[in-house]
Length: 122
Image (cartoon, rainbow, N blue to C red; front, side, top):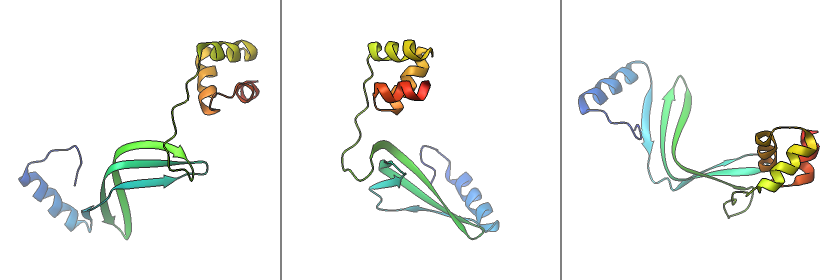
């Protein structure tokens, strides 16, 4: 019910009773293999997912714990991390007058596209 947390059985029973008194119900969702969160341009895939559902005040809240990876929307392969060279970082920083950390961050956002990074920082 609470991934990563350890409770003794007595505490767990007390908490379950209190939740029931407040009209809350929590249970584990069995058989989950992965959870996919679809965003505008990418997907977050959570493998080895443990999912708990809490019902309170007429709404359901899902708690998801697992190993998250990003991938391009609609593809089956996980997106490989973009490697940014020090030369590219220095070039973008010098062209825009920004710090190396700012240049590196924007290069990662643009998947290493130098021209796009320079345009965004200018």
